[in-house]
Image (tube, rainbow, N blue to C red):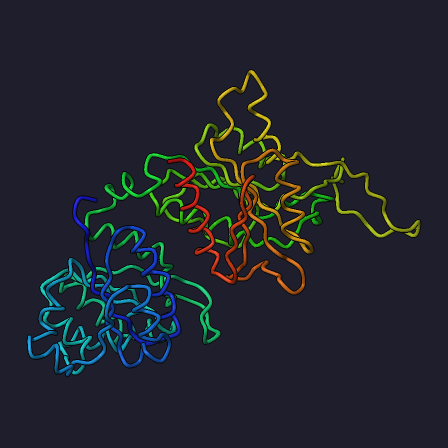
Length: 410
């Protein structure tokens, strides 16, 4: 980007306010600076300290801050950013905006600004559907505000429907569009011009039409890697087994079911600069799955004839030795090792056995179980070093891995 852009981020009240922490981190990765404005209600869910730490700037909370108001601080704040973003935008905050109220810092800034306003709503589905809210939305759109979301899904209150705050990646994309940075973002960032291939999730190996062999992988780490790689400017292909996750924005998505399908899709998308095998591929499959649902029998339990699935990581590592596939091995090949004991020792052995460049190891024992969780602890193991990151979010783990990859390719 030629000039660094800035946004004024107004954080309303609601459980979704916690997503603003991830939003700030992602915006910084896109070289967009953030000035946070925290409402009193928003401060019930996130702290000024956490926002200030991530944004690396002062968090504004009080309209009557004497030091700032000697210089008419609220007017300066409302004019100095390139874009004003309201996330989460509650029904109350949108009602103030639509009706021109200005009884706190956030609403005053919104009334005083001369910049475009992007609104990311979040509220209970009945509040969203209420005629008063819909009238306010119509007014705001007529006044020139743009919207991102809300998404449809389960809410903290237990109800389901429209009202969920859009995911940070979707809000970032809307911000880039508003700032006319979308095309520029694809050609900037530390991974600009690089191709990244990521496998994620479990594989399902059929036993019969209703049963299969699988594992507990949620796919969250692989999807986080794909999101982060795209945000850093890479051209990303995500090959995913069955998960409940939505494909990340800006990523080429290929859905597969079995290990053999994942191997074929992976090989079909070479060559790449970086390949990260984060999928938890089933080691075995039934040699011949049943065409019909298997029934219980008086003759005892069924006996399955198992065979090994293809080893995708080892296959990619071995491409350098195949003359017909010369040049197809990724420049940087990273595997994952889910271990339950002596994690680093077992992962180091896997690094040597598979022939990849790095192994990212994590503890999935009962004590350190990360399946389905948003946090993890990882160890990035290379041929010469071990670097550990304890109790970090999976998106932060992805960021650590990919920034290390940037250094390795430079």
